Length: 63
Image 1 (cartoon, one colour):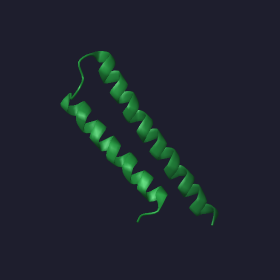
Image 2: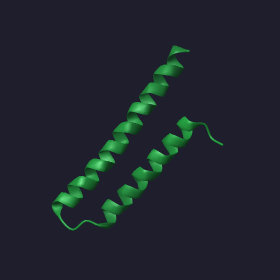
Image 3: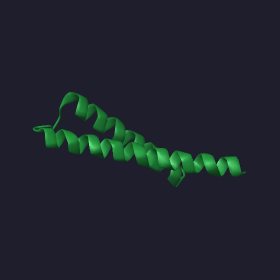
């Protein structure tokens, strides 16, 4: 079993990839509001991933 942090990072990346592909393909986008909501979710996932990566980088630099 992977450690929880690695699993979390992997799931964030997977969710981001799936959402990115859905946006590109126009899946479940029936209005501009749908598009904005999906892009917002994608940006939120990427921001969470960036924050986590920055925290891990800070921890490794402190050691």
